[in-house]
Length: 157
Image 1 (cartoon, rainbow, N blue to C red):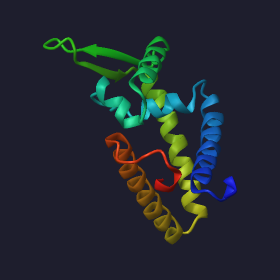
Image 2: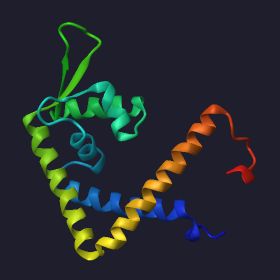
Image 3: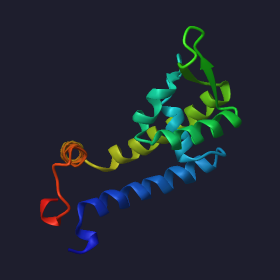
């Protein structure tokens, strides 16, 4: 099978295109798509527990630690340690972080508006149904892999 005919190639190709577009947009505001994505997943009012951010983003905790350190150094976030339990850390946006978050939000809204304006609703509904099914199947496959239910042969995948 040619790679262009595989589902995963098309998803990855589309995501890389979107990622390049978002990075070009974010560069205008001296930031990156990854930074915007993190900022968008921090509650603007109350902040977000540090332990909840990695799962929201689908990131490994080690990668998130580096990212949060970078965001803190750039003055976009601050860490608030609980007085009652020093292990509990909440990540809160600074004023600058809120500004950058708003810029990222506007970029996402702009992209989604463009797509919704150019692709008919029935096609988008089908797309969302299909991508939801793909995610469900992949998650089921991941659970089997973690449980050791799937061997190393290609036929089983």
